Image 1 (cartoon, rainbow, N blue to C red):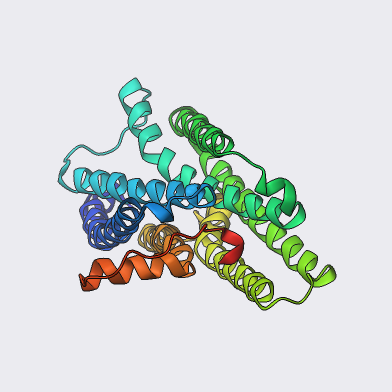
Image 2: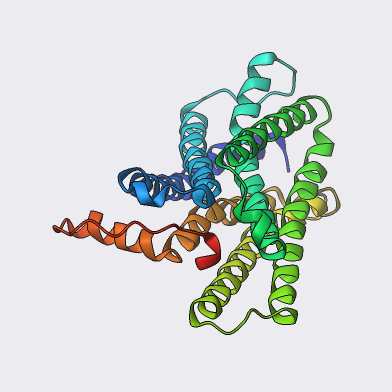
Length: 297
């Protein structure tokens, strides 16, 4: 493809990205903002075992805000991307990638937290709130470290970026899949004494983690596969086809930040009641305050 064709195609690419990603980012922002608003309005929803879900929702909200802002800027920016290193580009790239990385990290943390709750239920009940706070702070520091390294690769060794992204996606999916498999095996091989509440809670937990695992595979795996095969197929595909595939992969990847908070939210009975109160705006009696545990999802 000639340089003249590339120059003609670049504005079309920006329009296509803008038209596809901006509506998705708006939906992402609305859903996650509403979820945070529900948690903020209902004190009894803010328990230690929902901290990771709240943190995930915050990360997904920021993904929508940052991605939407960057796409808007790229759409109106007349300067084509360059390849020289600058601290300004480094900061922008780091800021744009930290929130998607934090979102994926939170998915892994939630699955590991549920795995610990399943294998060591009594020890898990003794975990203090400050432990969750330290885990959340550590997750953001790790996301910052990973995004900084990814930005450095993007500016200095760009050919290594797809492999780094693919590796991170595969690790996330591996943690989710193994955690769910162990939890499912543990519940089947060591059934609890028959109590209706325990049986229902275990089934809800299994279904919730299964849905999250399937959704994460469907939304993140295409990005991992695409990033891992880019050097192989780049010479065999036209520039337009490559752009369309990449855009589809990005849209699917960002959809994970829309669906996962919804899954965790609708599986919580107390959250559903809070949403009904906020949407219907009816006068309800104060709900009875009950401890919310993810194993009751």
